[in-house]
Length: 151
Image 1 (cartoon, rainbow, N blue to C red):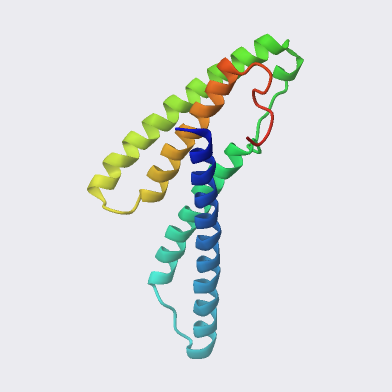
Image 2: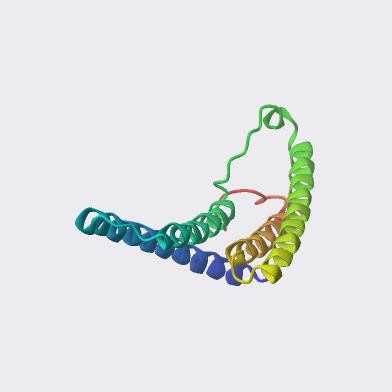
């Protein structure tokens, strides 16, 4: 997937994430107001909020990974030579790609059985696979700019 297309897709997911957050806050504000006004609660609000939170969190994670703001704990790795760190980065990208592929495959099976409930996870794990594939490409072929912030 070309670099510009990945960036555009990540920007779309970011907008979707923020929109889902706005809708979740709005729906819950209406729920609180109605609960206060008529002393009654809508049971479906919790399900809608959960679904909206999935669409907020998972696309948000894709953006954080894309701009290299994901959390990395490197107590030992920062002390290694650049070549060793690069090898470790390549291995971690391969492991993450394998995990994301497995998660996408298993989520797809759940999606088939429970239509629509896991679409956020599928969209975002596939998106993260593209982001990590791009990072892996950079690590392997671009020695100077590998892992240096936003693309």
